[in-house]
View (cartoon, rainbow, N blue to C red):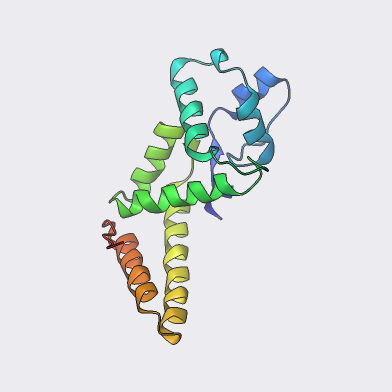
Length: 157
C-alpha cells in the first residue's frame, strides 16, 4: 500500500524530543502515537503547522482504536487519488504532500500506486459488468478516466 512508502520528514526531530527513535514510516503506529503526544511548541512554525495539518487530515476519526484503526492510511490513499483526479501529476503530488504534511514519498512510488489503482478499478469494473450494475460501471469508468487523465470526477449524486 502507498501509505507504507510514506515517510515523515521530521521523525528524528520528534524522536529526540520524546527520547527514543521512531520508525520513519509516516503511518507506523509508534509514529502516529508520538504525533499525538509530542509537545508542539518544541518545533519551528512550519514544522508545527505541518504536524497539525497531518493530524487534522489523517488522524481525526471517531474510531475507538484511533490511530491504529486503519483510517489514517485510508485517508492518505484518498488524498493521493483526489490530488491526481484534481489534475496534479505524480511529481506534483509528491511535492504537495511534502509541503503540506511533511510527508516524503518518491514520485515514482506514487506513479506505481496510481497504475495499481487503475488495474484494481478495472477488476472492479469487470465484476460490475458481469453482475450488470450500471451505476458502479459508470462510477468506476469515471474514476479510471480521472486517474489516467488527471481530470476531476463529476458525479450526479
